[in-house]
Image (tube, rainbow, N blue to C red; front, side, top):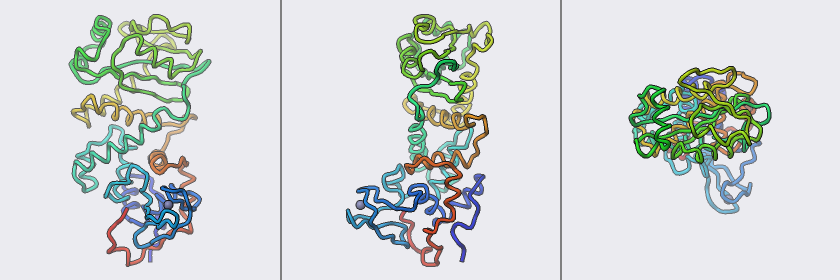
Length: 349
Ligand SMILES: [Zn+2]
């Protein structure tokens, strides 16, 4: 008889698929994330008095007299899709540099494109949850933040940058008139964290409000020379700007980090998400922000696929755990053995 946790924790997509294909293993993994100390608490009433119905992988709560699964009160709650497929989807979206289309995901999981689309949107919701991390503001005295905006969709996308700059300066109001969407972003160089969001226009008021809301007093803020930034900035920040059309780099004063982020975003949008409605664009931005912000840790060490996956899964199941915390859980005494009796049971998760 195979012990459900006998495989090492997955490191690659292929290993993840194999690992989570076993319903018991997927279940144990999710359970370990949700109740790391093994004390299973009812997600509805918070009472820890229950009995586990092993064959169906669910609990009966003695307090509220209802059953619950590991999926209750998560984004997976009302979905008939099994944990094995959900986990593979989480892994894929967390790690696919250019994103993954609902068609690709549908093929990979053996579900319809509609189902895959629904799953992807849910996962992006999770990624959005940590968009602004735990801190309310980025930057700080001595820190450097790049602020920049870009245009997605519409005709302006293919314009030469110099023309685009002029266009924006003259229009002042980029979005509505031209059918393109404005995305604004800020990069904290020390933290290596990006915050990006869809904004209604590039008016001074709009953009400066975002900076005020997100960036600490006294931060060195670098922008281009768009009119929105050339006034009223220095009372709050140490502001400097570059003329993008002339030189991209003026010492440390540049927005190349944000430019890099925009190119990643656009590559994903062009390659994978062929036609993104402006309405949905913010979700794709969140997704790209998540991957960007989870490329390296604060010391500059590369974050692994397994760690990125664990980050998403921890957010889904409500606990923030490091990957090593998880790995330590693999010998949990609470695992249910893989019995022959479970094979015929319809997956309730
Ligand atoms: Zn209960």
